[in-house]
Image (cartoon, rainbow over all chains, first blue to last red; front, side, top):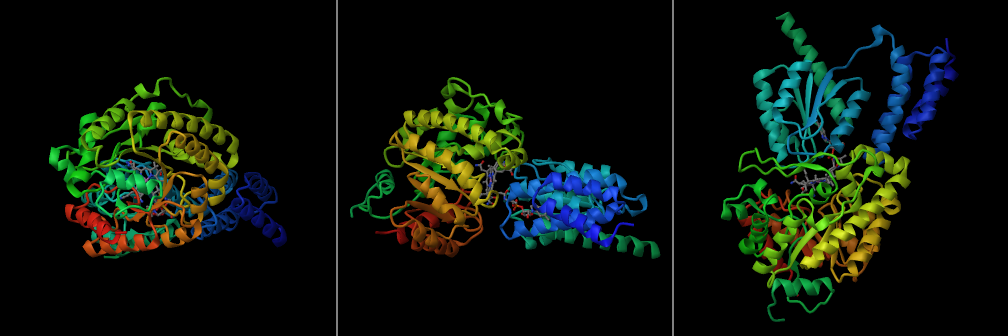
Length: 227
Length: 347
Ligand code: B12
C-alpha cells in the first residue's frame, strides 16, 4: 500500500502537470503511480481530472485561452495513456456515450472540441463527427453507436436552424436518445422551444447537464421496467 | 456643411478630416442581404462564383438602403484556395439557403509545406474578384467607395492547416509558426497590391481568428502583431486606407491593434467603445460596433436606433456592423439602421 504522503505527492504532480501543460511531469508521475502500486483510477480522477477541472475554471476566468487548454488536454491524455490500461475492469464504468458534432455549413469547432474534451475527462465515451456534419449523419450515427446522448453545436445563426431539423429526425427514428444543444447563438429558450433535452452555456456545464440527464435516463429505464 | 456623397465623406473620414456633414454607415466586410439577392433572383451560393453576380449583389445594399459601400467577396476562402485549399460552395443546396462556403480540404499539414504560387492575380477566384471590383467601380464607384478584404496572416493560417495544430504549435514551436506567418504576410502584401492596382478605396484586414476569445493578449502581441505591423506599413505605402477588423472580445488588445498602425480599427459588439476611445485618444479612427445578428436581425427598430446612438456616443468615427451583415436581415431594419446613423451622426 502506498503511503498517504506519497499518494498526495503523485496526485499533486499529476494535477500540476495538467494545469501547467507539462506532459513530461505528467508522464513521470503517472509511471511512478503505477510503480508504487497506486490505484490507477484514483490517479486519474483525483490527479488528472482534478487538474483539468481547474483548467476549465482558468478558461472561464479568462486566464487561460484556447491553445493553453488544448495543451493541458494533451498533458491529460499523456497521463491517461499510461494509466488507463491499469484501471481495474470492475472499476470501469463508462458514464455514457455521446455523439457530438457541429452542424452542416458550420466550421466553427473550437467550442465543440472543448465540450468534447470535458466529456472525455468525465469518463464519457465520445464519438466525434467533426464539423460541417450533414444533418442525417447525426441520426445515423446515434443509431449505429447506440449513444445515450447526441450533442449538437452551432456557431452561426443560420446553421443553428439545422438543430431543430436534427431533433425532429432523431425523435422519429431514435426516440430514446437524449439531445443536448449549445454554441454561442443557441439560447436556452431556443433549446427549449426546439424540444432539446438539455442546453448548456459552456463546456463544464455541458458535462454536468449530461450527467444529470444520464441519471434521469437510467431512472426512466428502471421505472419503465417496474411498470 | 453642404451634402456630400458617400465616397467623399468616407475618404475624409479615413484622413480624420472633420469637415464632414455626418459620419458614415458602411463596412469593410460582407454586407449582401437576401433582400438584395431577390432583386436579381440569385441564390446565395451563386454569388461567390460569378464576377457579374458578385458585383451586382455587392451593389444592392447601397442601392436598396443607401448603405455606403460596395464590398466583395462574401466568403473567407479566396486566399486559402490560391494556396491550395479546397472549398465547398454548397451549390447542391436549396436556392433559398444561406450557407457560407467552407474549406473542405486543408492546404498544408506542416507550416513548412506552404508554397506560394506565381502569378497570384491569375489564380483561382482572384480574377473573379478583380473583375467584380471593376464592374462595381464602373457602376457605383463615383458615389460610394468600393472595397475588398483579405484575411490576417493568423486567420489565413487557420484556414490552411488544422486549427488545433496551429493553436498548439503557436505555443510549443512559435518559431515555426512565426516563419509561416511571415511567408503569409508576404503573400498578403502581394495580394493587397493586386487589389489596389485594380482600384479600391480601402482594404479591410480580417484577423478574426485572433480575438481574446481564442488567444491571449500576450500571444497576440508576440506572435501576431509584428506581422500585422509589417503588413500595414507596406500596404499603407500604396496610399491605401487599411482597416484592421477583429471580432469577439477585443477589449484587452485594442491598444495593440492600434499600435500595429492600420489607418483604422474595427471592433464588434463585445468591445466597450467608450473605453476604447479613452484608451486610444482622439487621433485613433475607430469603426463599430453594431451586433449584426442580435441587433440588426433580431432587434426591433428601437434596438437598432439605441445601438447606433450608443456606438456614436461611445465615439466611433463611423458606424460599422461587428462582422458580416447577416443576409437574412429585413429591409425595414437595414433602412432603420442607415437612417439612425444619418440622424444621430450629424456633425
Ligand atoms: C474563430 C472564428 C472563426 C474561425 C473558425 C475556426 C474554427 N475552426 O472554429 C473562421 C475564421 C474559420 C471563421 C469563419 C467564419 N465565421 Co466566424 N467566428 C470566429 C469567432 C471569432 C470565435 C468563435 C470561437 O471559436 N469562440 C471560442 C469558443 C471557445 O467559444 P464557443 O464556440 O462559443 O463555445 C463555447 C460555448 O458556446 C459552448 N458550446 C459550444 N458548442 C456546444 C455544444 C453543446 C452541446 C453545448 C452544451 C455547449 C457548446 O461551450 C464552448 C466552450 O465553453 C466568432 C466571434 C466570437 N467571438 O464568437 C466568429 C463568428 C462565429 N463567425 C461568424 C461568421 C459570420 C463567419 C463566416 C460566415 C465569415 C464569412 N464571411 O465567411 C465564416 C463561416 C464559415 C462557415 N461556413 O462556417 C459570425 C457568426 C454570425 C452569426 N450570425 O451567426 C461570428 C459570431 C462573428 C460575428 N461577430 O458576427 N470564424
